[in-house]
Each structure stands twice: as structure tokens, then as C-alpha cells.
Image (tube, rainbow, N blue to C red):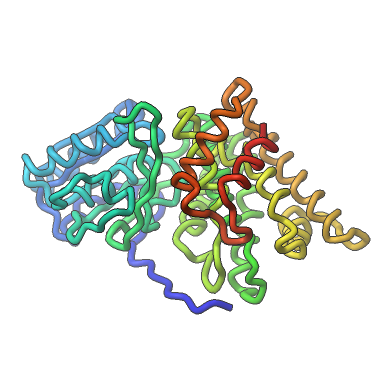
Length: 395
């Protein structure tokens, strides 16, 4: 069991009509001039944005708006947000949307007072020392960014887009408003991608060489089983409040570090997928589903009993008369079948709609390891050559 520090300072307001608390929560955390950051037209069409504006206005809180956040949030929009915050003397950031909007807010937060180029932070060449506080109204349960310390941004200003992360505790939202009713109108694709992402956040921590943290493992297994139970029900009946509530809360618990207490996480699948979505601009959750099975088969010998436990405790397979290798393969196949059952791809060809070339594979592997100067993974340490093999297995 590893020593750990668990830090979860975010206030969660969960349930119906909790967005009505936004003004009091902004004031509680010192906000007087807010940047409302959001994505496309859904926040407008649903009336949520207008409702938030009215609540802030009635409370005497000034605001400016910046929309246009896309999946795989772009550095170019982050720069606009930073300049807007400087021009308008914004002192609080409010994300209205999903993980991409929250991640974009986090990047704006880090760049507001930073004297250098904000991308330098995501290249891990420097650290900011002052940040704007952030709150969020979550509309897409998936990324878990509402309680995490991380942000992932895509640099769309270079010819071959780069996707990088930056993680600091200052990124943790001051509050997260979560009303499951706001997710009723999510398209099936976004719902399925979100379920996959939250499950992968759990599995990145679960597949570890550390086998002696039973409490953490049991929580992780319960979250995975919940996602597999409630996900298909929500897809079949999108306005089922109970299903949507369970999914929304599972997504938060999957990425607020709770399921990694006392263990060493892996995160190779996320790093491998980041290069896929950076190069092909695909949905993050779908990309994870496309490569996870290949990663699992490539690394499972590092801890076969863990994969056998996964098959039994999560996938519900009777492994009594199976070897650990047989159980692992049965469990991996069952998870891939679940992904396909909710409309997710389990290979790269299906994901991007074409065969990827050896040159593209090599490019992604080199980006993933900074030119083969770094490694990824915790269960198995992966170099560029290993990542090439995983991409090839996933073709």
C-alpha cells in the first residue's frame, strides 16, 4: 500500500435545480466579475445560459461571455479567454458545460497572470504562481474535470496538432453544480463517450501492481459496475433521472482521485489516446475504447491476477476453472463487447474511418514520448517502440 495525500476541496451542489445556487456560490468564493465560458449552442438552446445570466444579474454580479469551446479544447480560444479576462478585470471563471469547457477554463486560469506563453505550462517547462478561481455547472458527465486537478489542451496553432496536459491543485474547482436533469438532452454518442471516459479513469488507477488496497479496489469495482448497469439504461431512456444521477456522480468519483488512493496509476491508455485525438480530432471516450483492449493484452503479464480479478469482480465472469491468462482474455473480450454494445469502437480503423499508416503510428509514438526521451505507463513502462506495437495491435 502506497502512502497518499487525498485532496478534494470542491464543494458539490448535486440535484434538481441546483444551478439556482450559482450566484451565492460565486460570491462565497470572492467572485464579482465573472467570465462565463461555454461551448456551442446547446447551452443557449436549453435556456441554461440565459438562466445563469439572469441569476447573476439579479445578484449584482457582472459578467462577460466567451463561447465556442470544442471537444479537444483549443489553445487559440484559451488565448482569447486570457486576453478577455485581462481587458475586463475578471476575477472568477464559470464553466458551463462538460470537461472540455472546464479544461479550457483551467487553462485560462493558469494564463491570466502568467507573464510567459501559457503553452509553456502545458509543455511542463514552467509553473504559474497565481490562478483565477473556477466554478462549474456540469452538463456532460465524463471527464471528471469538475473535481480533478488536471487540464488537457490541444495546440491548434501548429501544423500537426499537439495535445498536452497540465496538473496543479489550483485547477480544482471551488464548486461544482451538478443537476442530472441538465444531461437529459445529451446525444447518445456523447453519453456513451462519457461513460467510457469515466470507466477508463477508474481502470487507469485500478490496473496497478499494487494489490493490497482493498478499500480502494472495491470502490473502483463498484463504480465500474454502476457505469455498466446505468449506462445502457440511460441510453434507452435518456430522461431517467436516477440513471443520469448515478452516471453523473460516478463520473465525478472516477476522477477525483478517490479510486487511486494507495495505488500507483497507469495512464498509458490516456496518453496513447491523446495522440489519436490530437492527430485525428476524434472523441476522447471513443479513442479510449479503441485502444484499451490492445493496451490490456500488451501489458497484462505484469499483473495477470489483477486482470483475472477484473474479469470476476467487474465483468461478472465465473473464472473458477480458468487460468489467470484465460480469465484475463475473457474479461478483456467482455469489456470490449460492452463498449461495442453502447456504440463505441474497439479498433482504430472503426474510430477514424480509415487505415492509419505506419508513418502516422510512428509520429504518434514519438509525440507520446517526446521523441522517445520519456516513457509512459505504471503497470508496464512503455517506450516509443512499445507504443508502436500497441497502435499496430489496435489497427
